[in-house]
Image 1 (cartoon, helix red, strand yellow):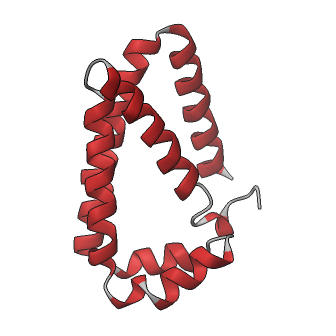
Image 2 (cartoon, rainbow, N blue to C red; image 1 turned 180 degrees about the vertical axis):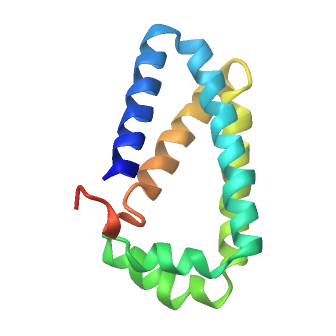
Image 3 (tube, rainbow, N blue to C red; image 1 turned 135 degrees about the vertical axis):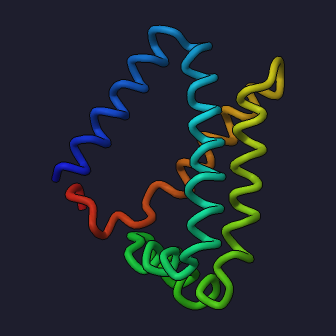
Amino acid sequence: MEQFTVWVVFVLFVLLFCLWKPNAARIFLGFFLLVMAIGVNVVTVLAAPQSYIALGADALIPFYRWGFLNIIALNPPLFVLPIAACQIAIALMMLGKGKTVKIGLAGGVLFLLATNRLGCGRCPTR
């Protein structure tokens, strides 16, 4: 429950930050996504690739669960590294200017929606 509480506090902080200073929050979120892509996804898939299979095994969506256990389990880096590259591109677009920012923000929303229900078998909200 403690991990869930920390996450809820963080999400509420980011929401309030977005409402208070949208441009500064966009920059924060761009750097956050960049750090998560490189510091978590790339490092984890290179150091402990099997952790991604465990993540997908708990997915709420049956298609995700099947894909992780039957396809991604064969070679996790082959799947995760392109996803991390996409995540890095989205983060860089969010940090850009003009139309690329809107594309980056839309990409960020789509990325989060696509990965939202992964690993929630252990979430207290399930």
